Length: 410
Length: 112
Image (cartoon, rainbow over all chains, first blue to last red; front, side, top):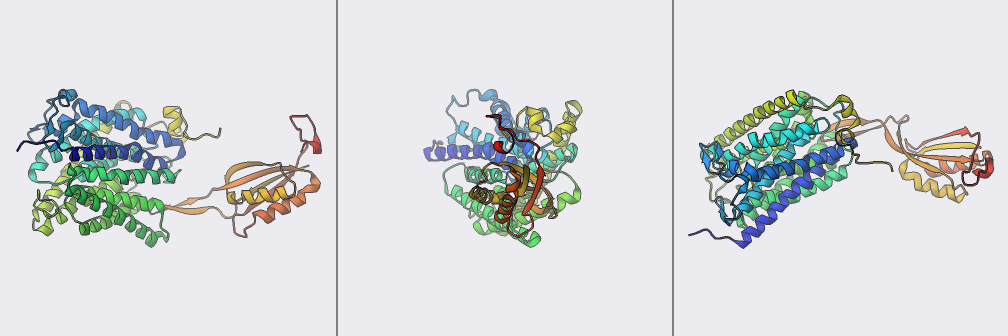
């Protein structure tokens, strides 16, 4: 049967695409913007906005083809339509989602690329040169994101091995979390590395937009208005809520009082951890995933980070990296063909080998992203420099990098 | 003439302003300030880590008054700003050499 465009699927995917755009601008921008010193609020938000713009343009020049073009030896896609030339004009349907236009599939995937790179910015805020970030974004997108997306989603070798990542546990959260860790190891610790949010209200709004947008992210990854999208939406919300409750519980047990930032962090931990599993697991599994991910993330942020002494400013590794790993392993345990008939399932469904494949994907993508990020950042450091001058860091980046102020008295 | 500088809890500003108005003391300047006294700050917890915040937000009122009115103003401020808990603030009183109203050029008590 020839593929036919479904207006229902197309409508849902248009909405999902818009929802994921909302996650980066302004979701991530506001979430991160509220958590830093007031002298850096504009720079922090700017990092998300500029990242979205750079990735959006490069995606249609060569990004989509390299990630989702015909497979070349399992490593990268073929660059057959640079500048998206002729793709929209042909009115073709997407090979990987045959009921929606190719262009819609491409722009939906673009939003994932954009948020992945924007997420990394949370680690380096308050000290990285804006010019260095402008170089880092296109290079990291090209050398890290595009191959990794191809390996997992574009028919590359990890997909061929049967690795599962429904909406980005490895491609989005692990790759950005590990890249964040590599970057901060090179950048060093901020002069004032205390996390005293200057405006938690921004972060509340940002988290709300992230949560809302995540339904496009995860349920949209069903690539149609289907039962699978409904299932993905339910487990996404469940995991987020359990993640929030678990972090609040940890706060209560450890410091005696629940905190709002803790609740927001737990929700994001639950959302990030369910992402790779959203199209493969049921509600019971989602409850376990959200709970476990939130608690491990709590310890990574409040114990591991201070012990190891790296300055992941807004805990990109501690939340996204760690939860990407937890969720990806969880797929190997909880995935079930009863939710998604296209897969064999994980350990509980009798396919223990899936855990091995998932672990392999974690190691390969984690190591690749870490090493390549170190190399990219080192080269930038040796050429234009990664870090701002000491006095600029103390005065704040808004004034020194942009000659603007987020707040003024009159 | 005296200058009365008062540091109070920000949420007590409305009570103090209203009480001062009732005794006929209208002129005042208000600033948002940060500081610490014997309380030495508080502890805040973010993502499971505790941070000592030793400068707390306070509100500063500045009033210039006739010397004979100072006691009444001070008593009013104490009464309206007091909660009895640590962190209620302080009042500092110092002499003022001269006051000039810019609009008219009047000086001294008439300019207050």
